[in-house]
Length: 135
Image (cartoon, rainbow, N blue to C red; front, side):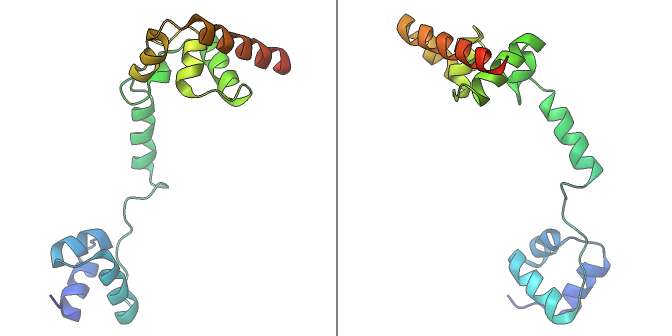
Protein backbone atom coordinates (compact mmCIF):
# COMPACT_ATOMS: atom_id res chain seq x y z
CA UNK A 1 0.00 0.00 0.00
CA UNK A 2 1.45 3.34 -1.05
CA UNK A 3 1.14 6.17 1.40
CA UNK A 4 1.26 9.80 0.46
CA UNK A 5 3.80 12.30 1.69
CA UNK A 6 1.03 13.74 3.86
CA UNK A 7 0.64 10.46 5.75
CA UNK A 8 4.37 10.28 6.46
CA UNK A 9 4.51 13.98 7.34
CA UNK A 10 1.55 13.62 9.74
CA UNK A 11 3.31 10.78 11.54
CA UNK A 12 6.59 12.69 11.77
CA UNK A 13 4.91 15.87 13.00
CA UNK A 14 2.82 13.83 15.43
CA UNK A 15 5.99 12.78 17.21
CA UNK A 16 5.88 9.13 16.19
CA UNK A 17 9.00 7.06 15.84
CA UNK A 18 9.77 5.28 12.58
CA UNK A 19 8.61 2.00 14.11
CA UNK A 20 5.31 3.49 15.25
CA UNK A 21 4.78 5.19 11.87
CA UNK A 22 5.42 1.90 10.08
CA UNK A 23 2.84 0.14 12.23
CA UNK A 24 0.28 2.89 11.73
CA UNK A 25 0.78 3.10 7.96
CA UNK A 26 1.06 -0.65 7.41
CA UNK A 27 4.51 -0.52 5.84
CA UNK A 28 7.96 -1.74 6.80
CA UNK A 29 10.31 0.33 8.90
CA UNK A 30 12.70 0.58 5.98
CA UNK A 31 9.93 2.12 3.86
CA UNK A 32 9.49 4.80 6.51
CA UNK A 33 13.25 5.48 6.53
CA UNK A 34 13.26 5.76 2.72
CA UNK A 35 10.35 8.21 2.84
CA UNK A 36 12.07 10.20 5.61
CA UNK A 37 15.21 10.53 3.51
CA UNK A 38 13.30 11.30 0.32
CA UNK A 39 11.04 13.94 1.87
CA UNK A 40 13.43 15.28 4.52
CA UNK A 41 11.29 14.14 7.46
CA UNK A 42 12.57 13.58 10.97
CA UNK A 43 10.87 10.95 13.10
CA UNK A 44 11.17 10.70 16.87
CA UNK A 45 13.90 8.37 18.01
CA UNK A 46 12.98 4.82 18.84
CA UNK A 47 13.54 3.57 22.36
CA UNK A 48 17.24 4.14 22.77
CA UNK A 49 19.83 2.50 24.98
CA UNK A 50 20.93 6.00 25.87
CA UNK A 51 17.47 6.75 27.22
CA UNK A 52 17.19 7.05 31.00
CA UNK A 53 14.04 4.90 30.99
CA UNK A 54 15.95 2.12 29.23
CA UNK A 55 18.76 2.26 31.80
CA UNK A 56 16.26 2.14 34.67
CA UNK A 57 14.45 -0.82 33.07
CA UNK A 58 17.70 -2.75 32.60
CA UNK A 59 18.78 -1.96 36.17
CA UNK A 60 15.50 -3.38 37.48
CA UNK A 61 15.77 -6.45 35.26
CA UNK A 62 19.34 -7.17 36.34
CA UNK A 63 18.25 -7.05 39.99
CA UNK A 64 15.43 -9.55 39.33
CA UNK A 65 16.47 -13.15 40.12
CA UNK A 66 14.16 -14.52 37.42
CA UNK A 67 15.94 -12.46 34.78
CA UNK A 68 19.45 -12.61 36.24
CA UNK A 69 19.89 -15.57 38.59
CA UNK A 70 23.44 -14.50 39.44
CA UNK A 71 22.10 -11.86 41.84
CA UNK A 72 21.43 -14.71 44.28
CA UNK A 73 25.18 -15.27 44.69
CA UNK A 74 27.00 -13.86 47.69
CA UNK A 75 29.92 -11.52 47.05
CA UNK A 76 32.44 -14.32 47.62
CA UNK A 77 30.53 -16.72 45.39
CA UNK A 78 30.26 -14.07 42.68
CA UNK A 79 34.01 -13.47 42.85
CA UNK A 80 34.66 -17.21 42.47
CA UNK A 81 32.11 -17.41 39.65
CA UNK A 82 33.69 -14.50 37.76
CA UNK A 83 37.12 -16.04 38.22
CA UNK A 84 35.97 -19.42 36.89
CA UNK A 85 34.27 -17.88 33.87
CA UNK A 86 37.02 -15.45 32.93
CA UNK A 87 40.28 -17.16 33.92
CA UNK A 88 39.06 -20.74 34.16
CA UNK A 89 37.24 -20.53 30.82
CA UNK A 90 34.22 -22.37 32.23
CA UNK A 91 30.66 -22.15 31.02
CA UNK A 92 28.03 -20.67 33.32
CA UNK A 93 26.78 -24.07 34.43
CA UNK A 94 30.29 -25.42 35.01
CA UNK A 95 31.21 -22.38 37.10
CA UNK A 96 28.03 -22.64 39.17
CA UNK A 97 28.64 -26.35 39.77
CA UNK A 98 32.24 -25.59 40.70
CA UNK A 99 31.28 -23.08 43.38
CA UNK A 100 28.56 -25.39 44.69
CA UNK A 101 25.59 -23.33 43.49
CA UNK A 102 24.18 -25.54 40.76
CA UNK A 103 20.76 -24.94 42.30
CA UNK A 104 20.62 -21.52 40.65
CA UNK A 105 19.90 -22.60 37.09
CA UNK A 106 17.94 -25.50 35.71
CA UNK A 107 20.59 -26.24 33.11
CA UNK A 108 23.21 -26.32 35.86
CA UNK A 109 21.07 -28.82 37.75
CA UNK A 110 21.41 -31.19 34.81
CA UNK A 111 25.19 -31.04 35.13
CA UNK A 112 25.21 -31.59 38.90
CA UNK A 113 22.34 -34.10 38.78
CA UNK A 114 24.44 -36.65 36.96
CA UNK A 115 26.48 -37.20 40.14
CA UNK A 116 29.59 -37.29 38.03
CA UNK A 117 32.11 -36.73 40.83
CA UNK A 118 35.06 -36.94 38.45
CA UNK A 119 33.74 -34.07 36.37
CA UNK A 120 32.90 -32.02 39.47
CA UNK A 121 36.39 -32.56 40.88
CA UNK A 122 37.89 -31.48 37.53
CA UNK A 123 35.86 -28.29 37.75
CA UNK A 124 37.08 -27.68 41.29
CA UNK A 125 40.70 -28.21 40.20
CA UNK A 126 40.20 -25.72 37.36
CA UNK A 127 38.66 -23.23 39.81
CA UNK A 128 41.59 -23.62 42.19
CA UNK A 129 44.08 -23.12 39.34
CA UNK A 130 42.28 -19.95 38.31
CA UNK A 131 42.34 -18.71 41.91
CA UNK A 132 46.07 -19.45 42.19
CA UNK A 133 46.84 -17.70 38.90
CA UNK A 134 44.85 -14.64 39.96
CA UNK A 135 46.14 -14.20 43.43
